[in-house]
Image 1 (cartoon, rainbow, N blue to C red):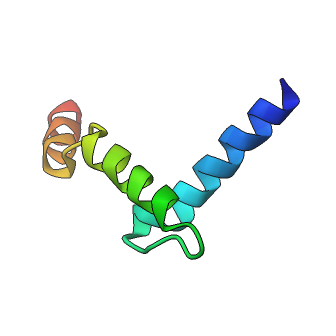
Image 2: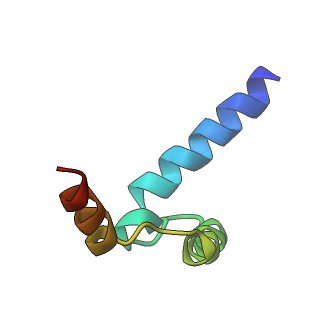
Length: 58
């Protein structure tokens, strides 16, 4: 179980360090491409909508 946790943590760190910033993963282009596909499908929050909602609360 600990190995699984370490692998997931490594993948998260790699995602934050590279595809999230728009960079390629060195030495593992297949991993970078897979992470880019996941990032493209992931839901994102609309900053303008969040700001408008925050303005209504105050």
